[in-house]
Length: 488
Ligand code: NAI
Image (cartoon, rainbow, N blue to C red; front, side, top):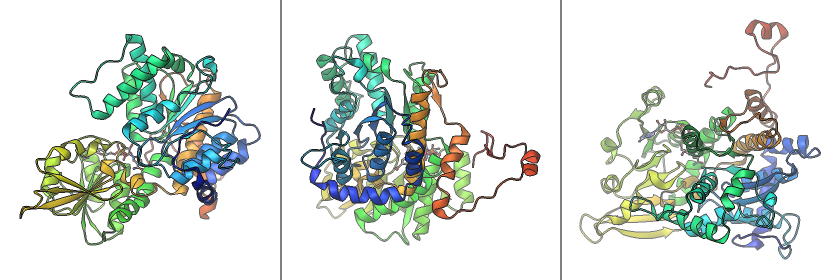
């Protein structure tokens, strides 16, 4: 059967392959998992539905999963984050542009929301699974929880017998989710319940997806086991912080080319992502102001030398505003109307609801001018003496992936090594009940293993505990070296 896929342009595959080859060199964790498990193939029988930014780094992740025995279908978890050359290379695989022989990928840069939810459904819709449900997906690898959400909603609506109509409070995007599920349930009744019954679990990449999983677990509506990859130390304390330290300035520069040095940058949120964002902006010579709701993080920001203020106090001061909270309604349309002329507004939290894009479009007389793809000027009072504008990046969606190419390979190697280990754990230990329905984190020894796999590439010489020192500290010489309470 011909390979199913939908990407922008397969002829980009060669360019993608070159980039993937270079990325492999920078992803020692994934490459050593290939060396360790390439022969034993612990993911044989795993059918993974993946929903994660379809970048060059993700291509290395996908091909690692395949090398470990898995079958994979993939979509991006953001409409702007796909690197079309990476998607093409993964589809072509060891085949040719005329006869692709790689992995079914459904992702391209600049999807519509309808496209996006169509791709989310495609990763769940495996050939032959209608007649033989055992051919459908049995694992999810998720980033932000959209694939997991689709299954949970599908099951709930199948139990209720129908999909509700969208209400006035529902977002435009949610109405598309409902339409997608309505169509899929009409085409294949019972599909979501069958899929959920076969799923061994989900491994979730990011803070926002993990928050959604804990909410499901709390409400006792979580349908299958989950591993919280985000809270591996080698994920959130590296990708969220050092990754954003690289990709945030990259996104701002590629989008606008403004000099960051000397500007005032307001960073909303001082969690892991906010810490990396603030450090990056300071590193470029900006004066950074942080906003926070959590007294501990506010105090950390102050002790790190940043001014901490409320957004409303600094609306007229900031030149660049970056949201990093994972919350919603952080910068509202009325806030943007009070900013300096040509202030830049962008988000690196998972969803676009941190910035009030819907409200911006409703400001009387506002005009939207496309400067270039994913860079828009919103003009207030057009034509009047008071005319001013703000520049909004990636329509309020993750600017580091929409305006640049996301985090670099080395840091993503840490995140994705955790992902692969988590997939192996859930898939292979499903039968012995080691991971019951609930949200789990990987054992600390595995977290330490991920770090260990990345030391040699950086020339790190790790000190070894002597037997006497280990006994004195009450530790095993081979780890774990910290209690679960330790915060790094
Ligand atoms: P976190 O929980 O460590 O940090 C978020 C911070 O925002 C917290 O300290 C919280 O107190 C603060 N906050 C919440 N509401 C606020 C408000 N109204 N005003 C000011 N501060 C507020 O979460 P983390 O790991 O930093 O992730 C943040 C977001 O970034 C999540 O949506 C996550 O999924 C996403 N993320 C994005 C990445 C990217 O590549 N762009 C990479 C990793 C995570």
